[in-house]
Length: 229
View 1 (tube, rainbow, N blue to C red):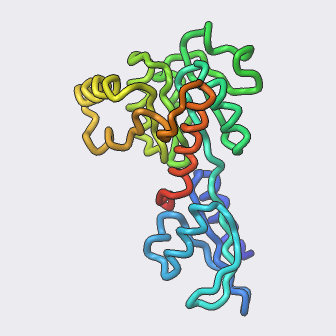
View 2 (view 1 turned 120 degrees about the horizontal axis):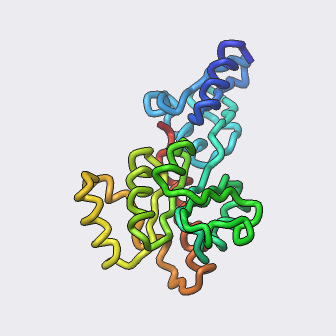
View 3 (view 1 turned 90 degrees about the vertical axis):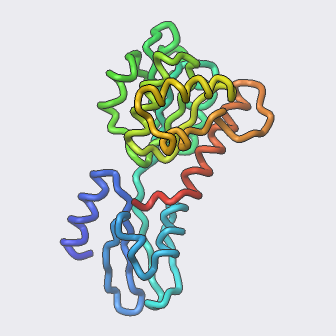
């Protein structure tokens, strides 16, 4: 690999931005395609497909046979609420290679005893979230049912362009949440990005089943959405 390509690749990876290396099989020529450039690339469709899957592989293209090496940031899941659903959701996400962080100022809930081997921050969202550098490859789930915790966390997640944002609560509860968020200046377009009620509609009733529905919805958002830019 050329030094300039390697340097550019390392810079993109350090900034948690997706990148692809296109290698022409016939002559070995390589070029780097940054995530923000994919939409303008002649191989846009095939590049997007590989970005969504996160997998490298061989492709037949108008440029000839190429190997696409995909570099995408490892996904993260940030949860507000050290609740029963979180106790099922966090290890499930860990099994899928998510870096999981749980935020809850209520120290009776946010403990390593309840969440062994997990990153738990017993602080309010306005203190806990900014240092996490939440980005486009972060999924966010608000699970406390407490507006003092979930509302500022949702506002932060929307501002950081998370690929998935979900909030626990009924349609009636979410309606009240929408009113509060609008009063704080959140736009209709931003609010439309919140999955609420959270999770796929699979008839889940237990905390573990709700966690399954949430993780499935997060997976669909990661693999089916345009995460190139």
